Image 1 (cartoon, rainbow, N blue to C red):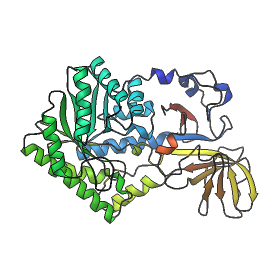
Image 2 (image 1 turned 90 degrees about the vertical axis):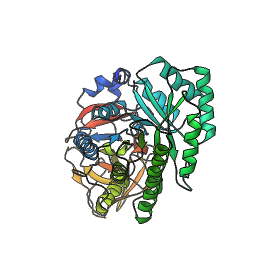
Image 3 (image 1 turned 135 degrees about the vertical axis):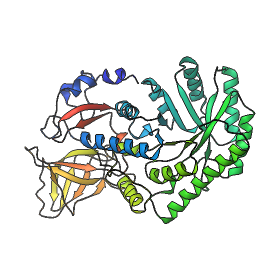
Image 4 (image 1 turned 45 degrees about the vertical axis):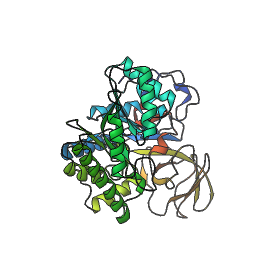
Length: 426
């Protein structure tokens, strides 16, 4: 990857979370200033990533994938942060997963060399861009999904006009009844594979893809639904092999988001030993204080996930207490524009008294009751000492929709001193 565009990006006055004195600096120069977020050196709210937790989560996923014999193409949409993607690739990631044309464009702007587009490629602008990149850069690899003859025909038409020197790689997507994209039956996938065979050498069937995360949080019903989908994947792979429709020695099977990746790795590794199993978990690198922490704990308790150590929440958003208008109520200087609220309200976890750098746990009985655009209502026990000017740190449930609210995020050490400035490409 080429991180020069990130390092040289110039900070503007008004960039959220950056002090006025940083205006005009490059992101790389700002990262060396050694700001401390508890010392009143940066304006709140700010989003921070705990350096130690990030390192722990990276090591935990490295150990898991090595032990299970699977690969990882983390979903880049979680962070859209090239610096973190670079670290994931350094950890051995197979590639980076994209979901939209904008993701593809952004990844290529920093030189991501292998993209798994976990979606149907039907946008003509995106198709033209991908084919141009494949023609321009022989090192670039791209894989996308198909779930209909119509999609195959759209790609074939574009490829005939372009006349690439190599085929476009595709995965047949399998879906769930009532779900999103993907064929619903094994026989439909086989039919598509036969159709693809007639499109060689323009298109090459590389393997299969599915996404199990739409079933929601782990439960007995969700586990059964995931099992059924994985069985469909295995049956389809077997059928394609038997008909000679998938002749690659190591076909790709890509399944596995951030909630059920343990179950996926376990089932597919044993059922499809000849395939290259590629997970797409993206949220592991920061984890969270809610949805994914709960999902992974449930998977561990059900015996579907074994980790060397639990993932740790690395993502926090800090704000000031700006008002204590009533007993048991504090108003914070952050809101919907700063932290996720799509799964559940932010989780208040820490606080720091004005004029100190000491961090304390908030304790039981503290919760966010509601968010406005730039305000949060924090409910506290009546005698809680939190006062105006103090700082409160909040965790989130579902990190993806916190990342997308920040152009710059601070990586911090245990004392909340900034060690790096993480730039995003939203």
